[in-house]
Image (cartoon, rainbow, N blue to C red; front, top):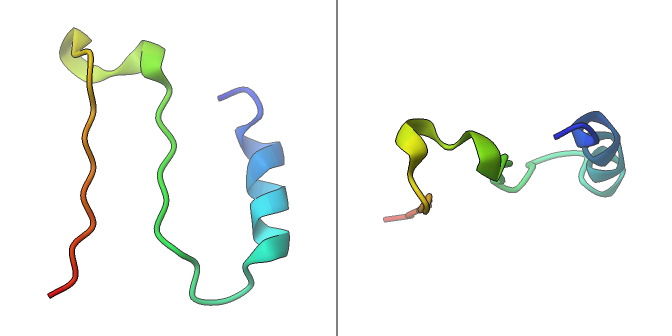
Length: 44
């Protein structure tokens, strides 16, 4: 997470419009001490 701004700047050079969905999770900070986080993007 300390490098998020740097990574975000590089990401912005590859995508300039219609940014694809993404997420960033720092594992050491998952809520309620869970071991897994699951994400889903659905299009109907």
